Length: 148
Image: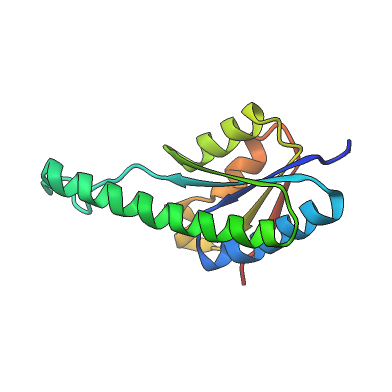
């Protein structure tokens, strides 16, 4: 593996991602690598297919989700910078797998670090595994960190 100069930490801002952030930050500090923290806002879908949500409500939900995501990203970036790590944040829209893989290529990340929830059985079948799909599609190494 070549030198790691840029680490992409893809976070879903969950408890599982906290351990992955710590691992990514520790690596970035020890390798003097830049750390980019990415959060992807997935498409907002109504709970029921025939449920109607007016445009104003959707816009309010979108603003709140962005504000919440930006706040968490800012806190993570502050923690990284206080530890002496060069850090940037990205808040994107779309399918998390697509955006993580695209961002890693676009920003020439040498390593992707992400948390995994460790779901098994039906939850994994229905929810899928973002980590598993990123591992299979990424062009750089991927480090997964079990959240619990």
